[in-house]
Image 1 (cartoon, rainbow over the protein chains, first blue to last red):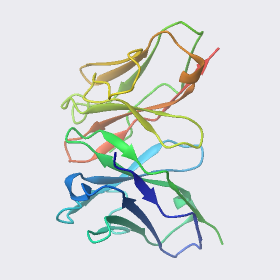
Image 2: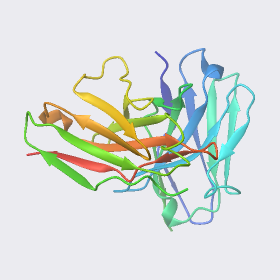
Image 3: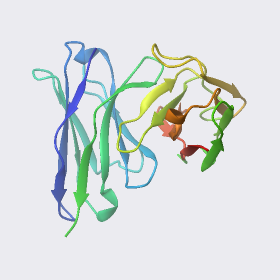
Length: 118
Length: 110
């Protein structure tokens, strides 16, 4: 079964950017859309956006438009999420998740902790 | 897009049944059968428990069931067990081609 392996924890400063990676283990990489979801400490899940690994098209939550970029590298089966102009409110665990045809998140990465602190 | 509304906490004794509600609008739950439910234990990634309102993925116990009426979806856990103690989130596809999650419910097994 496909697995999603994410990059390690990041500590960064306010105003900076962070780029998190999500590598798919299977060669079905281009067959499923991938979403990014974040969870601030002690808070709920928050949807950030989606990327089509096949064509690279993206769609973002209104909250993150202008601040988030999602890209993919088909040669390495890796999805990237970059968030800019970071503030302390962006401190969270960031998950990538594969979505089925009926919009259910069936496979999740292990999460990447991003800490924004001066 | 506002988060779907869930009760903050629900509790029950072992063996009992509990139901978690998830209220949205006619632009999400009310308009699509793309409602899913997730279980999350502390410091773990969420796990898919129900998809398409009432379907269980392979390997998920049949003690978990889902339903929907109008703008409200529900997750029922029957025969409550200690390992069911976790946070639960609903999610729905929306008319703006986005996804929205619920506020989350903490289930406590007494």
